Amino acid sequence: MTAPDIDLAAAKLRRQLADRLTAAGWLRSPQWRAAVEDIPRHEFVPRFYAETDRPGLTTWTPVTKALAGVDEWLRLIYADETLITQFDGQELDWSSPQPISNAHPTSSSTLPALVVRMLEDLDVNDNTTVLEIGTGTGYSTALLCHRVGAIRVTSVETDPDVAARARGALAHCGYRPRLLTRDGLAGAPEGAPYDRTIATMGVRSIPPAWVKQTRPGGLILSTLRGWMRSLGLVRLTVGDDNHARGRFLSGDPSFMIARQQDAPESLGMIPGPDEGNTRTTPHGPALLNMPDSGFVAQLAMPNARYFAMPADNSTMNTYVLDATNDAFAVLSPSDNDGWVVRQGGPTRLWDDVEKALALWHAADSPGPTEFGVTVTPGSQHVWLGSPDGPSWRLPTDL
Ligand SMILES: C[S@@+](CC[C@H](N)C(=O)[O-])C[C@H]1O[C@@H](n2cnc3c(N)ncnc32)[C@H](O)[C@@H]1O
Image (cartoon, protein in one colour):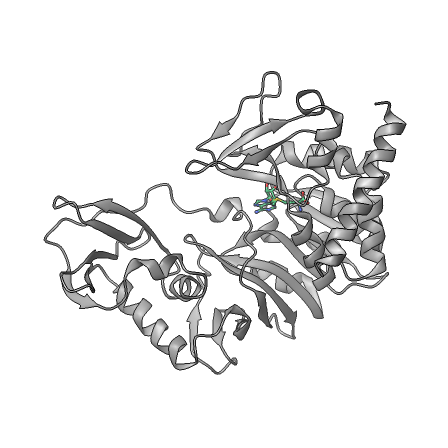
C-alpha cells in the first residue's frame, strides 16, 4: 500500500471508529467527532504491543506495519483498544521484538472510548485552556489541539523518551502545544491558570498544584486510585482558596498510576503465626475483588495490598498488608463457613474495612457515583452521599 492509500484506509477506519464511539454514547459532540475523524492515531502509535487473550498470564504481542501487514496494523490501531508503548519504564527494543509477559505497562495510547469520554466530560468550548498530565503518545494531546487550538494546550510527560516521541508525532501533524517533560504532579505553572486540568494517569489524591493552577470555577478531571485498585473517574470544580469538590462520574476506568506514586516494591512484613489478635468475621477476602465493595475497601485501607498464600494445613490465607506502617490482617476460612481474621500493627485494617462496609450498607450499598471528593489545602476526603456524609481520608503525604 502506498502512503496515500494508507491515509485513505486510515480515514475510513477513523470514521468507523467514530461511528462505534457515537453508537456507544461516548462520542456526543460534532467537534470531538471531527477530532477523532481527523487525527491519525497511526502517526502516534506506529508500533506497539497488543494484549493477547489467553487464560492465566497476560501476554502482549508486538505489532508493527512489517510484522502484522498494513491492513491488520491499521485495523488494530483503529480498534477501540489500549495500545501499550512501554513497559517497566524501559524503552522497547524494536530491532527484534518478542512477546512480553510478566511486565508492567508504563506508557500507552489509552482506549479511545475512554479518551473521548473524558474529553466530552471535560466540557470545553473553543477558547478553553487545558492542562493535560500524561502526554504519553500525544494522541489525546492532538485531539485537544484539534478541538481548542494548540496555543491553549499544555501537556506534561514525566518520561523523556516518551515525551520526545510525542513531540515528534505532534509536530508531524502540525501541532505545537506547550510540551513539558517533568513530574506532572507539580502541574505547569507557566501556563496557569487553566480552565481545565485533565490527567491520563491515576493519582492517589489530587495534587495541590493542579488545584492551584486551575482557575476558580474550572474543572479537574482525573482518575483516583489506590494500590489495590482504581477508585474511578472524578470531576472536581475548583473553588476559591485552593479548595475543590465534585463527584465520581464512574468507578470503572483505571489508569496506570503516576510513576512517583507507585506502591513500594516490598509488600510489607509478613506477620509470624503468633502475631496479632484473632476473631471471627462474616466478611471474607472476596469483597476485595468485587467492584463496589472493593471500592469501599480501597477507601478504608488506602495503603494496603493483598495476596493469597496456602497455609501449612493447605487452606488459603489472604494477607492484607500495609507497607507504610506494618499493619496486617490475615483472613482464613473458618470451620463454619465464615472467616477468621488475625490483625496486628498500629491500625486494625479489617476493622476499618468492616466499619466502612457498615456505613455503605446503611446507605443501601450505592455505586461510586454516590461518592464525592472534597479537596482542601490541608486534607482530602472521599465522602458518601454528601460532603457532610461518612468520609474517608485520601493519602496526601506522598
Ligand atoms: C496512559 S498513558 C497516557 C496516554 C496518553 N494521554 C495518550 O493518549 O497516549 C500515561 C502517561 O502518564 C505518564 N506519567 C506517569 N506519571 C507521570 C507524572 N508524574 N507526570 C507526567 N506524566 C506521567 C506516563 O509516562 C505515561 O506516558
